[in-house]
Every structure is written in structure tokens, then in C-alpha cells.
Image 1 (tube, rainbow, N blue to C red):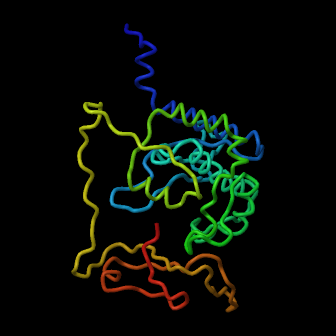
Image 2 (cartoon, one colour):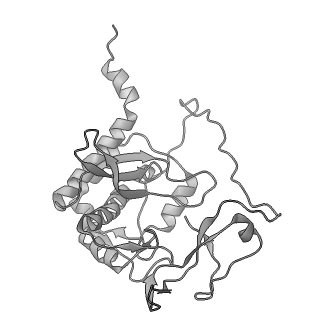
Length: 277
């Protein structure tokens, strides 16, 4: 019978080290916000091949169930691309998702438009977590989403940030993800430097990612997909014929063939509808 040495275990426990470190950060957050729920922490890639957007993190309530049926836990995802940006940026995302987690626990509506548009309630709660929301909606589809970590919060979580910087030995290096992160960073904020693969490094002989699918010149049908405009708010009618304003963009379904036929323009904001996500 062979017994694994400490070195053998260290060479195969990269994933568990990542999860333990992220779980420790979440536990530190619960120390400051006792109403935060326990979560199942996961990681993976946050950018799909051919896409120009990144999911840095997400909170998914009720996603996991205990094997004995005694509890249901939320899922907390931290993208591998996020882990390449350094402890401060990771902490910013974890706190952002913490706002969503607490809002869910308290039954507070902090988003609309299927969770994309972050409303003023989210912005107010974010300040209580040590985040600085934009003074105005920073994007017509995401509202007050781009909240930055304050220096006070960075000091509060200094030990956690230091551990995130030192203990996360693996991450996903993605130049496009780094560019997107840099565009959303605060004035003077420095992201962790990218690493260069050493010649002969293990795992560098990887296959090329598949080419992204492009629209054809010939109109086509296909499965419908959601498209959204750039409205900050839009009018909706209730069952009794009344009208009210709802935060976030208008959202409709369209086939790829319809999109190939030319732009679809919103009559309210005048912007072109674009695929959601």
C-alpha cells in the first residue's frame, strides 16, 4: 500500500487550496456581517471563448442541497480570471456578492432585469459593506453595479487580502479579462501583474481555443435569445391596464435570423437592442 507524501498531496490539492482560501475570506465577511448565510464556494472560468464579457462572481440562492436534506445553501462563484487580479480586487467581488446574499436573506429587491440591473437599494447596501457605488448608473444595463472597494474596507480586511495574495497559487490568465478589469478599476488602482509562463512549464502545450461563431451573411432562424436595449427605466402595463416604470432595460426575444436582418431599435431610448449577457 502506497502512502501519499506531503509533497504529493500539495501537488494535487490546488483546487482545494483555492476553495479553502476563498472560504476563509467569506468567513471573515460573516464576522462583520453576521446575517450573511453559509455558502458553497466554487470557482471556474468566468469568460466563455469568443465572449467579450467576464463573470467575476455570482451568488445563486438555494443552488445546493445537503445530502441528508437538512439544509439548502447558496452558491458563491469566484471566477478563475478574478483570482489573477490580486487580493484587493477579489475582496471587492466577494463583498459585492455578499450584498446580493444579504439582500436575498432579508427579502430585499436589490436588482431587476433578471439580476442584471443593480438598483439604488443595492448601492445603499454596498456602502455598508465598504464599497463605493458610482454617483450615477455607470451602465444602462447594469445600473450601480460597478462598486469599488474603499481604502477603509481594504484596511479592515487587510489580513484577508494578504492571504488571497499569497495562498492562491493558481488562477486563469486571460489578457482580455485583464483589459476589462482595468477599464472598470478606480483611479490609481493597481491590479496584480500578469505572469509569464516559463519555457517548458507543465501544461503549456494546450490546444487552441475554438474560433467564436460569427453571424452568417445569409439570414437564419434558430433558437430565440434575449436582447436588451439601454433604457434606464421603461414603462410596463399591469393586468388592470395601469402603467408604471420599472428599472432596467426593455428585454425581448429574437431569433438570430432576425438580428442578421439589421439593427432592432428601441423606440424609448433610441439604442440598438443587443444580445443579453
